[in-house]
Length: 450
Image (cartoon, rainbow, N blue to C red):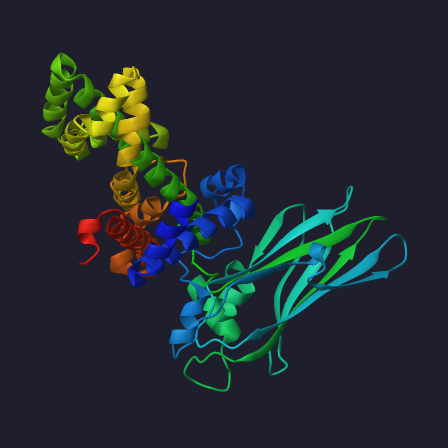
């Protein structure tokens, strides 16, 4: 414990170590938060779900915070449900088992552009007679615009841009102009958004005892949430959050597995020498000339793209690498040390000498190597995902970039789609690199003066 405290105190002397440690701790906390807030099964369900799950989100919407950096504000997406009490609901009983249900919701519209779409999803409780509803929008200047009058069945949807009366009145027969007509100031000839408070009013009539009407009001703006959405309306925050534990787990397991296994194999070869060492060295030399990334691409293409398969292949292909020869050179010196001779003299077994006398002396050199290696394997997993060889079931940073590239994000101006995971990848690599370099200075006396 005393040695650990001294090493930590020495580590904190370097500003780069403090920055790297802060970055690593941030991503560790983010990973823990992701796993607690969105359980694994839920994350997979959300990521693989289609528009039946993400219907309330607009497509290709940048994050809402970009409005802070824009002079021209974009409308922010939202949705409210009367079943949750978010809308005002008044029920007035009538005669002969009829009743009138009025749903209303007031919202501020302060944007300088028009929304993509407005929808109302109805859920009804009835036996035989369908309820009837009228939908209206009341504008800030007091105009009441009738949207639809229709009987509603269970799970029915009313899309404003598809209502004939609005298409003919505002769109000139074209649906894409309906939103502009609904939210424009009629007093200005050039289409200009009318800002202020708008009110959605839904007046429904039921014709049976116990019948009910609830509505989910969905406003598809041009921006959404903290991370934006993709082509499937998915909230990218799910993949950004869950990409953190996946990236850290892959990087840490790969680095830990390779570093420890390489250390043990090098120690065994150096201690036993002879044919054991010869076999290890020949396997290492053959493996070092094999193309690492193309082999992984072949495995992902022709065999399996599971992240566990890729992780196992990465460890197997990396064990017999340059680290074997570097560690062997150090172990060859340790083998001739006086304390090893003393261990031999009192009859210590080969395994005891290897695992209790030789390998522990290498741990100070192993720690910086292990920490620095995490970043490279995080980038490796992302690289394979960007190439379309990542695990198709997992929401990862590389998968986000792959989807963005496939859908032409750069050409269409959806820069957020690529920049968000790219920034997280760079910050992760930068944090582990800074911490690894600082640990190397602490545990390698030759580097302390640099």
